[in-house]
Amino acid sequence: MATNITGFIDGVSGFRVLGSDHTGGGNKTAGDINGDGFEDLVIGAHYDSSVAFRAGQVAVVFGKADGFSGTLNFSDLDGSDGFLMDGQASGDFMGQIVSAAIKATGGSNRTDTDSSDT
Image (cartoon, rainbow, N blue to C red; front, side):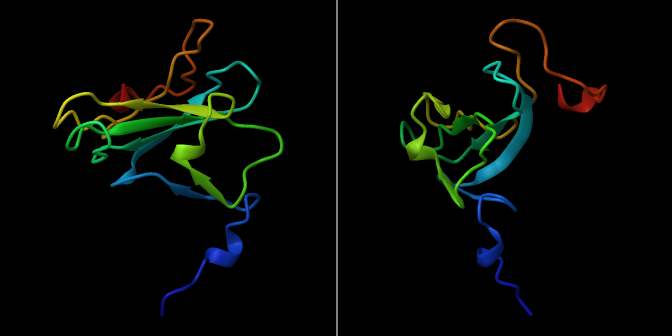
């Protein structure tokens, strides 16, 4: 029996991400990229074809104190809450594999020692 989780996705218990083809195929916490004290997310959409066929796309979503609405749409990111990066050529598959990020002010955000995702 399938369970409808729509009622639980309220921005407090979780949120739904709307991107493009295969959004979430690669995702990872990214540390605090923008230096505001909140963990950020990196979400890949490696089959996105908005620039070129399967060029891919990556969204960096900034964490925040007041959480998110029930739905986060890639197209709504405006720089204050995150940003998008697009692959440039067909078959780039940008976002297929994502990893922890580097702070804009320098230094790694990595806190684990798992070398398999470097």
